[in-house]
Amino acid sequence: MIFGAEGDEVLAYVQVVVEQALLHRFSSESGSCQPAASCYLSARSRNRIQELAEPKKAACANDLSSGWETMIWERPLLVDFGFPSDRLLKLSEPKKCQAPYLQQRPRQSPEWPVSPAALSYKASPRILELARPKVLHPEFLMDREVSKFAQEAIASPRTLELARAKRLHPDYVPLQDAEWPVTKAAKHAVATPRLVELAQPCKRPSMGSVQFNPDAFTVEEAAKKATCSARIQELARPIKR
Image 1 (cartoon, one colour):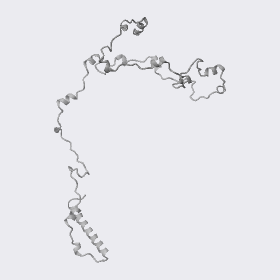
Image 2 (cartoon, rainbow, N blue to C red; image 1 turned 180 degrees about the vertical axis):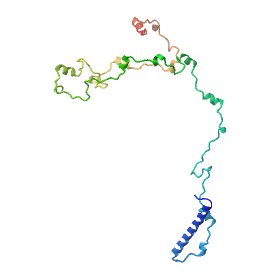
Image 3 (cartoon, rainbow, N blue to C red; image 1 turned 90 degrees about the vertical axis):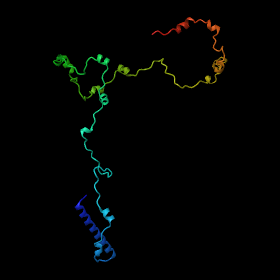
Image 4 (cartoon, one colour; image 1 turned 180 degrees about the horizontal axis):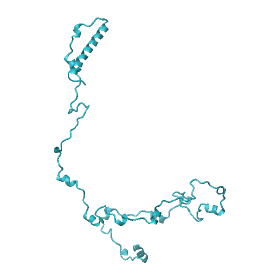
């Protein structure tokens, strides 16, 4: 952009060039080749046209509405900064170890001096031998060819017998499947009266009648005089481990 006196001169020059171009266009469209009248050449533009013809001014450093540039913040002085409070200084301190941990810790610091014996130690021949990497066998070949005799070899009957997969025992019975067909006899079976009696659910009185019956939870006389057998006492003992 051009500002100052040079900008005004350029603006005046542009106005004159535009006016002459417009007058030449009007005269060419009308079919006349006569020069333009002096009144057209001396005509002045309106205030609105002059206002629109002015170049856009640069935005101020503090004006962020233009969007072309942002304000550059100056580095504030050290006097503008405040010192941290006592609370912040206390919170910034590292967490201290507990007393039981310090008592059980073998050393006060993770760094400890190395003893002179360790500094001047020399490895024994056995340690140097064990530290060497494993060496391949001298006769080892990366891509060795199979001999003709090995390709034409025939396995012996013993080798063929050992190569067979392990067989199951003759008396082995595989696990029964989860689904198996039901026999015809099971489909036509009829339950005996005893099975029907045992299949009946246990009938108990409702809680509404039990809570008002004082003899609902009485123990029978036979149960009071019952004696456990030796087998029951044996089974009632806890398992010793």
